[in-house]
Length: 264
Length: 258
Image (cartoon, rainbow over all chains, first blue to last red):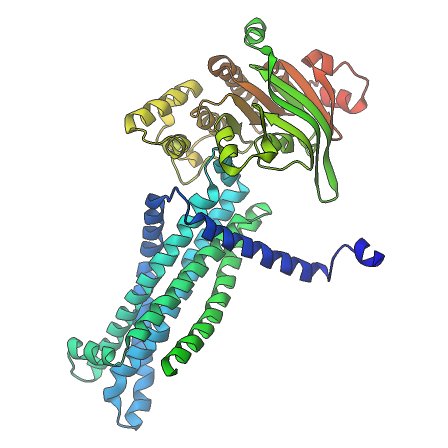
């Protein structure tokens, strides 16, 4: 017993630090839910940040969504041709893009572009004492910097995800149209014929979780940055790596839950 | 100047009272029993080597750090026992000028100055904000820099804008963290002049954290030397250096090298 009392770490430095990190992240996330319902709401800043997130990612999402649509269609066509089922192409692509690829591609792009930018911006504000300056000016930096950014990513990423799905389907149509004459109206009609409300709902829910994850992880890493400029780079890097990891975990869980609902 | 400075000090009204203050970080004991009083209208320069806890002291005063032990009374309030709202209300009465200036680098000078005002004072018209910004920019002599970004300003200008940002809320207490560090002697003397002007014009009480003896001598009505986590000497500039302590002597000789 005396030995335990005098020990510096409960398990080891690494394991102790891991649990301390989890506890800090939990407190940080709880703080978000406490602060988000309190006044002032800083709506102007939420709108500014939403534009930042949306506009910054839009060109890349457009390009990537389009390419994903073209490539996925190109790769799927030979297999369907073997069975004489190329008419199923729009439905197949529709399901794949709306259910999985649209939200996932959007989330991965935003994790790289927006998550790293939030991590670096808040990290740099932290190490140059700008966050402390806000605090001593009686402005709640958590509310002004964290809550607004997390809300912005949570609101914007689902919209971007739906947009990415539409662009992806358009890319698919372009590929289909180059092989056989078809109208865009009939393509979208057959693509959406197999998509249910649950698919759209799951897709938007996923994107909401991804958006929240990207925002909160970026803000957490930035807000807790240390070690000067090195810490800023580390915060940006960790924001991307951790949010991507969590996005894949969430994908796995949400797919399981939605399948359970679908076949229940 | 000295007469004018003495004239506005009210030694019956303490604005900051600290007793038995202790603070440590892990195994490192930084403050080991600080007792200190700042009176209304007074400027006190706190001197000491780097890493002796000077900045920690003012961060405790403004509630950025919590003390381990001891009592910190600021304008009659126990800083470490206040709720968030009460602490924010107290912080509006305290100005904190950071060593790095800590200007918001995504905002221009006007936005930096207007930000604390618009966030804390409700229903303020644009003209009122413009007038307040103009007034503090005039006070620090940088009216022509209103639309510039912090990255376009020199070190001295950034310090001035940092001070202006605190003045916009008309604080009763000013805390300066190394106001002249990293500045050339001419710019340093301009900042010293500004600190004295702020004391006169806004009737503030100030703590000036510094290791620049010229700054301490010219801004402080009293000086205090922080050594090994405690105040070694508190008194006039001349009084605090009347000691045989080797570290204090070395500090003095280095700064006033002939």
